Image (cartoon, rainbow, N blue to C red):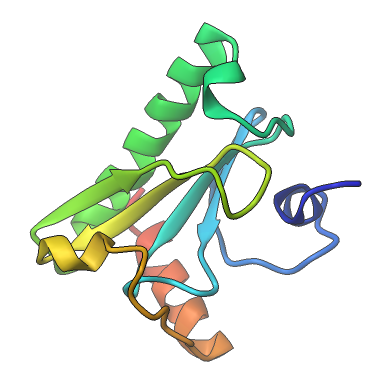
Length: 130
């Protein structure tokens, strides 16, 4: 069964896509920790990040770096934080989270519920940073 992220990659589910290339995709988290929380995902469905081939792992991080730099240009925050948890969805993904405090990347805190219009505005803003 395809993961939720594979369904987004295949355009079976809607998402605010930030960037995409042949191997990777970045889109807004619909239940973000903070506004601007982005997920960076390899298109090849694999559950555990350390099962990626070395070139895929490096490529994922380089793609995430490009996305983080666009976020850094367009979102008011002190830093862009990065986390890999790997328990929520069985598909490798990196969380890129705008940070003003360490609490902004606390995955035990309640998630935000944003309107589709808010997500679209945030995505447009970040896409403008490329």
